[in-house]
Image (cartoon, rainbow, N blue to C red; front, side, top):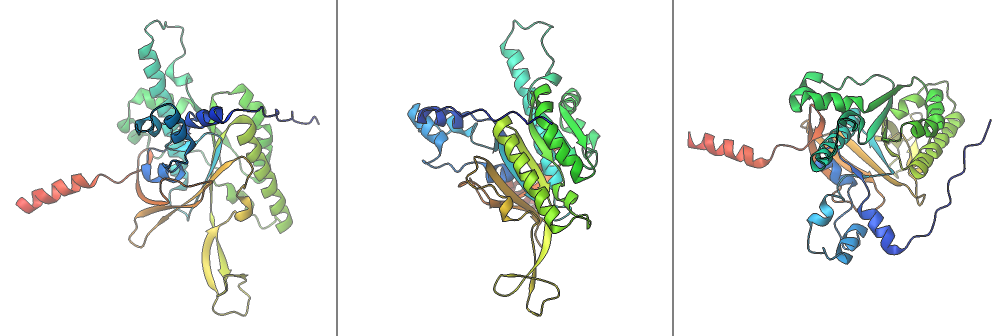
Length: 340
């Protein structure tokens, strides 16, 4: 068995080149600012993008960085955690759909700007960023008729044409897929976003010993880290919460323990050791959940630096997560009712 090729040696860059690279880093959006802001750098003077804008003479122009600093940066890892029904998969698929719709719109703008293009050019269905989705079940895309109502039917078909799907049923297939992914990416260079749905579901079988489970997690951690660094692949994964018992001092305990004051808490099933620290990967962990009134909430649990916000409220539509309607619409209805 041949060894995979070694990673290329990084070349030196000037500080300005690094800042400019940060400014123009592609970002991925789910079209919901409540979630996008959780993975967007905070607008501070320490932000490299703001520093480049200042050097370029655009320090007072907020639009200079607004289009490049919102959303999940390329070669980042986003983990969506939450209880069943919280919208983890729909949020991940929202990133996939909007990545495709944005690529189609960008391709259409390029075609409009270039009047010399002829019929031999690639169609919008084959241009722009593409997405690989890995999961246990085939996505139903919620309601296809709703997708067509929300956008042009031809755009929906073009968006789906740029989505690749690989079904896996156990952790051995997942590891095999990740090992073979570099060669597959060479054949599909337009794929820049990878979605790993229900990652922790493959670690639930009782036949797995704790040692085996720890080894598998280490393998997954290493493979994901390698894909982001060597192939600039952006990865979004969904995982479940686990029920753990803690004593009054905050120390883990067991159900058979003698402490009757133990408290059961839901925590991310992938522990703190899963979070890469100083490994060259931007890692974000977001929890999706409901409040007591059934409203959808989200909160940032881990990030490589300050972000625009740390929590937010959102809802769902045919394309995935979205912001609540603006309050002005409700104010207009309230004022009309008051006048009646």
